[in-house]
Image (cartoon, rainbow, N blue to C red):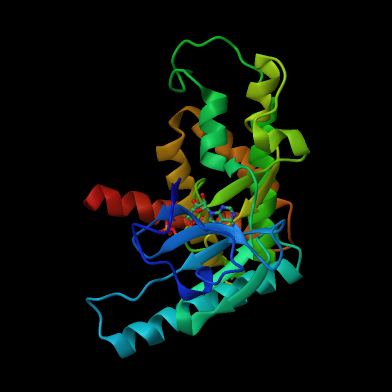
Length: 267
Ligand SMILES: Nc1ncnc2c1ncn2[C@@H]1O[C@H](COP(=O)(O)OP(=O)(O)OP(=O)(O)O)[C@@H](O)[C@H]1O
């Protein structure tokens, strides 16, 4: 993390005297994410900022940024209203390229899983038997969160374990305030799954779109966490129980996988 003020000019909303000095959390291809506060200094928030793109025509750029941010906020609001675990939207100015949302404490699910797996060798190699119950519970939690999302008629478009946060259930966990080593390791995968980054999300009720969403997650999971690949079925089992049409989405996933395999065989 770095103080944001020097490297890039922050959006105007972060330069008002009342604003808490922003911290630049990430600088991605599309935009930046700052940590600051909303209304009161005790309410942390995430500010997503899409700066103007110098290589794009300014009118087109402003129109695209506005439309994308507005659509992301709309999807988030819909999810939040329906109880899907996502950050609440606090404020936005799509024309100025920013959106403020609830700050989610914790770590990305990717980091939690990797911390849990530690130095373990790849699946299939000789390894001591480990009780994976905490990781199994997390896989169920991810399946339930994605199921809740699909049930509301939203597909994420970029499901990965980096686009999910693991929100601690107890106050101490966010600060790494853990007891003995075993306890600390178990806590790496403990918490509630919160879905983030809805920049590519769309509204859809189709089995095909939902199955593609799951397929993207399956592929991302296999390449990010090869040592836990066999646990993906647990995620799918829990997804299958979340809404009436979930079993037909899982059936569709078979077709999507088949097409994926054919495509990779053809190169
Ligand atoms: N509401 C939030 N609370 C806490 N941290 C967040 C929040 N939203 C995003 N982050 C952190 O910022 C990172 C980037 O956020 P996000 O993926 O939404 O931005 P992005 O610009 O769309 O990124 P990308 O270019 O990777 O798509 C996340 O990986 C996460 O670590």
